[in-house]
Image 1: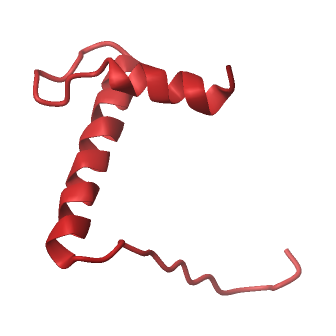
Image 2: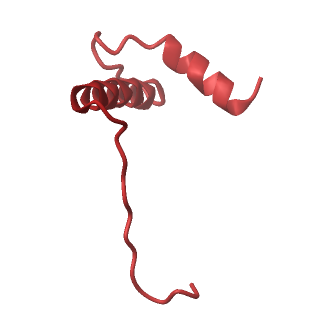
Amino acid sequence: MTNNEEFEKILENIDENGPEPQEEPQRQYYFMKKARAILKQKAEELGRPLTACTVTFGCPTV
């Protein structure tokens, strides 16, 4: 099983509608799953996939 498959399996077992866990890393997984649900809902409302753009500046050789 790859790391991504393991991660997806962990998220499957998280209930994003319940109270947030108090222990790490379950707390982080809870908010990751909740963020996914919010982003999915927003994409459905807009009728298109969401995108992001990161603009950096400074020395291009670093």
